[in-house]
Amino acid sequence: MLKKTITYKDFDGNERTEDFYFHISEAEAIKMELGKSGGLSARINQIISAQDVPEIMEVFEDLIKKSYGVKSLDGREFIKSEELYRSFAQTNAYSKFFMELCTEEGAAADFVNAILPNGGAVITENK
Image 1 (cartoon, rainbow, N blue to C red):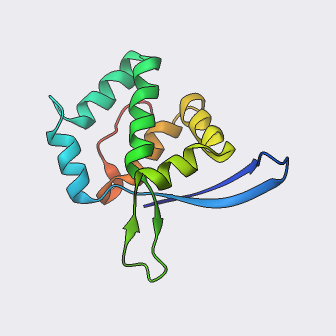
Image 2 (spheres, rainbow, N blue to C red):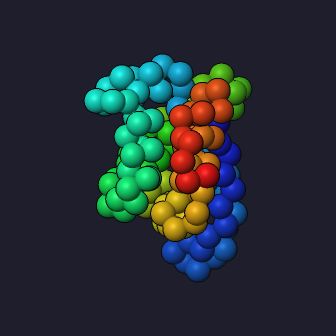
């Protein structure tokens, strides 16, 4: 699980610092890996190597969407929903985070490795 602390300005101009959580369970990772021809990890490594920026942005937008959630108060559940993601995606925190993934060297690989189970050893290039 990745806990990402993001400082951003809200739409009233107030500076906010909030924690956001991202996680892919083992079951979700297997579904993603087996659901793509050649596997998700091969696809990610291929587009990173090719520096295919539009494809990289699409993949990372999808990974953010699939991994974003909220921990339950008792820590038993990691709750994900379209509504929770949409609420996050409409903030400047999302914009700042997405830009970081797209522009900072190593940020995308670090993100993928942090959200995947067992340390996410699927991303090996550009790190």
